Amino acid sequence: MHSQTAASPSPRTADIYDLLSRANPDILTIAHRGLWSAAPENSLAAIRAAAELGVEFVEIDTQTTADGHLVVIHDKTLDRTTSAKGIVGASSFAAVRDARLRAGAGGDTAALTDERIPTLEEVLEEARGRVFVNIDTKFPHELPLVIAAVRRLGAEDHVIIKSDVEPESGSFPTLDADWFGSIPHMPMFLVRPGKFADDLRMIEPLRAPMVEVKFTDIADLAAGRDELERQNIRLWINTLDVSYNLDFNDSRAIQDPEGVWGALVAAGVGAIQTDTNVEFKQWLATRSGR
Image (cartoon, rainbow, N blue to C red):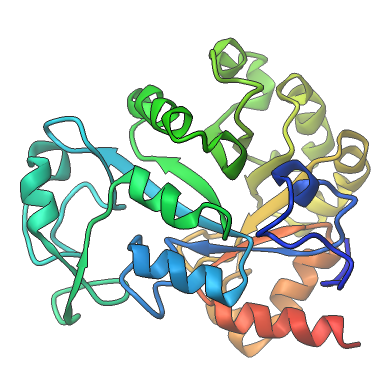
């Protein structure tokens, strides 16, 4: 995988499997909770801003209210990102909807906006045809509700569902899920030192188009390149400051993009989730111009 190319598929028109295929040379951008540098995190405005920037994926978080509505918010509580207080899962949908979202990543000093917490269905409709959606289901037991919402909207080809796996366990309950094979799935796991290729071979039954991993040695990622190629798996890495993939994080990337993003791409990474999407896209543009 190399830099962006004019011949590569647009996120607005590509089949999700074509986009994820290693035959597509683009390095994909995932906007963490939407483009929250321009709008409240996980808001419809953040989804729109990410689409307008041209990212391929937005990552969003979903959980249910006390009365069973799937809403898009990361924290267990309303406190950080909204004008309200309380536990999302113990609050009614009406109470959650009444809260105003705070700007950006929230916090007590962040300004209140007119944006409200969206439902999962509203986010999927906002993103449809513009940007693909990676759904982080905050509580695994709520995944059937998420799957039902995706199916109800006919959004199976516009999302990717992720879940934790333990490659060496040999046990993958997802294989028995009634949605497996009809909705793209991304396994997530910690790379065992010196055993990334082995881990990839162990998860082959999952037929993953992409994997999200954490690592303790970047050399392990490069060592898995042949197996990634054989199975046609795209490699997703987070450079969020809270990801703790050594010092391969956004803060250092702003100062040394080649030392962070460039090193990851050289190791075979084909998708990067970041909180610094504007800077990352600018860096990708400089690579394509070389």
